[in-house]
Length: 298
Image (cartoon, rainbow, N blue to C red; front, side, top):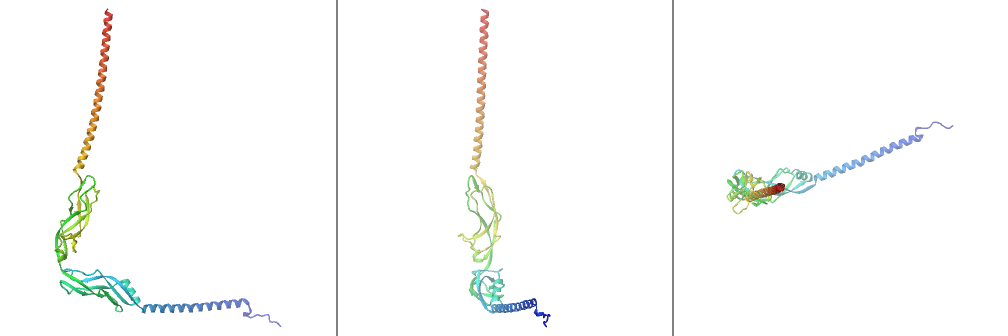
């Protein structure tokens, strides 16, 4: 006798569901294994990068430590190079932040010429470094201050047309200069240079930067206080221009007066001519009357 009852797994749809579930579980297992391998590989790569050494050269400003109130230091470079070596991540961070300095310690030195070894501070202990140049030569001089006159110089004193440049005037007659004694002693004057356009037609007001020069016109390395000054450059019209304007006005007035006189003369002549004509007409009428009277008498 045939059994009409069927087991659960005898149905096709049940087998399909079970197959789908097994396929999903297998997919999850395979994907998880790959991600785990990828994470482990990436972590190993990061650890390798952190542990690997790296070298990088940076260009940074040089700091000079000295008694700036008493001395002036010259001769040192503005920038130096430093080559740092160490763990890759640490070198990269140091290069990006640059939270360290390279300096020359002159605090224990007096006036004169000296050779000083450069140092670095603020670097991580795991980093090694090399500074180029390793030593610098400096000249330490006594700080000096003096008062010198200000002279205004103009780019041009000739203007277009009938305009002329007057005597320029600076807001300050004298300024203070500070620097190395050898430099200050050579300063002859402080110049305020003003550019005057050729087509200027009115007074100029400018604020210009001052420049200290020696007798030969060379710029000296000193600090000027204040380093700018206001300058006024008068611009006016020349006398010839005024005379030309006056002459033009006089000529115009003379022409107008001449035209008026001509008109008056023409009017007078016309009036006289009209009067003569009237007189002649009157005489002729009188003569006619007299002749008529004589004829009547006869």
